[in-house]
Image (cartoon, rainbow, N blue to C red; front, side, top):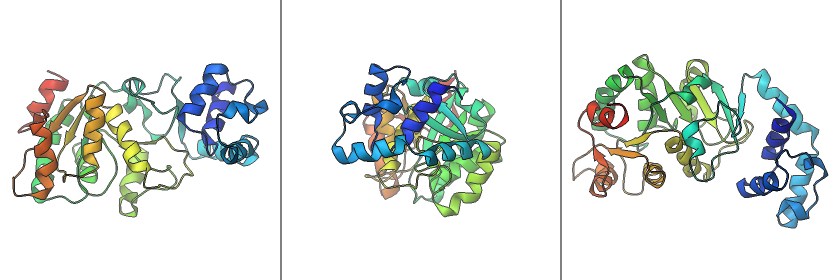
Length: 287
């Protein structure tokens, strides 16, 4: 890790420092050479946040934490690195830093597809994934999802069971896998697939981080496939990010009587592509 990357990653660990503050600091000092001599005025923060940030800037504990990441085979990828997902750079306020464990080569694969849906699901949704994903895997599609219960976990498992590749984007850090029920899946993915987060590994997951990670799920993917979703499902946030970034949006049609299909049916009304077969996705991503 070169000196600039060390400074950027350290800054990324400072509490109270957000995306815009890092942007302003990089704009005024592209190599962050004056980072450790910064004063309150240059932090663009309220006093309480400035004090916390400055304390973190001079914390040896953070340097030790970063050293521990390498001992745990966690890769640190900044937006300036070659390994950074190219499509993610095109999104609004892409993460300055990504923490990854597993096969980081998957981030540079050409065809990534986000597959997301409700934590609560029906047999219909599960069967649809088991029908559609095998052919996608056969054509080299990498499945991206959020390691949540329900549709996300089923999509990850389907990719693995069909000898394919999958990427999990999590809320919180890599040392705090959530939910507990998916810890074994996470362990397998960190060994043979890939898990990523925009949060430092010691970060505990918080409610607000879940909708934020959805922008990364859609941001690294060429398209987003919503399998099942209630009207107010978080999966619709992922679809909305995909629309904003000009990516493909696919939806599985469902019964008008099922609450788990109300969100997907509304997406179809709004112009998402209806998916009956794997080819409905492949013809947009590959053919």
